[in-house]
Image 1 (tube, helix red, strand yellow):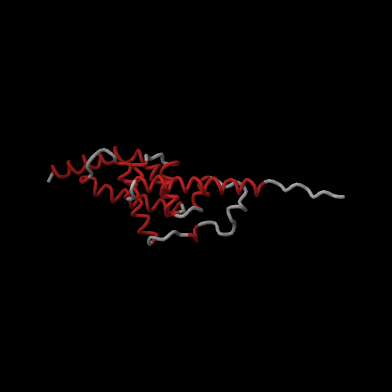
Image 2 (spheres, rainbow, N blue to C red):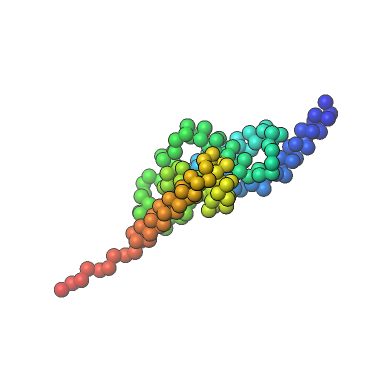
Length: 172
């Protein structure tokens, strides 16, 4: 009995040592997926509980993609596999926001594009790691990132153009 308690404590300590450095990444990804702080916090908590229960089965050293894949599953379950557009500020279009942040622009992307661009540009995962998290081939990751970057650039240009004052009309 004592050995199993010691083994449990050792596993818990190993999990903490391996998983806690990625807590900020998990929270940042959860915020993108869940769109509210409270929902993101709950999703991360559920993710870490599931990960602790499954930690003994982890093979290899790549814990970050593994954790983020669990987090993605948790978020999808909580969202019922739909994107919560109601949680996004619907009172202002992207063009009407004063200066949209990258997070706001990502929130306006379709979910499949938003998650890959967030994993690449905010969390700094490799294409291979993103493929592991999302469960799609690396080539799909690459095309989604390219599409997301194009949409982000277009949205940013549109926002910049909308902020510029129009030239005054000429009087004759």
